[in-house]
Length: 107
Image 1 (cartoon, rainbow, N blue to C red):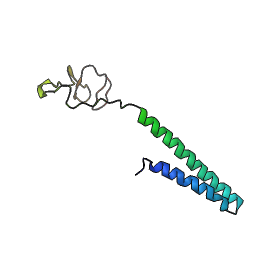
Image 2: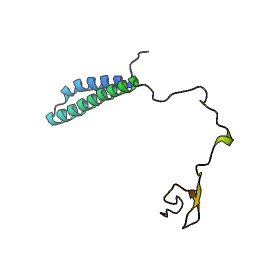
Image 3: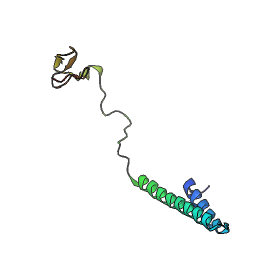
Image 4: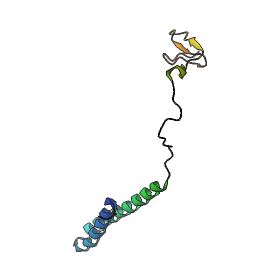
């Protein structure tokens, strides 16, 4: 089995198809099909170049076998440290917010 990708096989097929356009008798039709095939070949070349570029880029995410730190339930704190109440609807909200996340009232 070869290392050739399906895109490379498709590109070769297009190149063979391009050679067979010389058998088309109508000049306009031959030119139209030739341009379509040439555009498709160019798209294959660009795709392969981008695919190869992406393969060379390192994965930005660090993979670990185990978590860096195990979080216990008691360690998780509420995001609302200094509770306040909305003047409009009375919902609990963080004191550092200038608006109520529930009703949108701006204080």
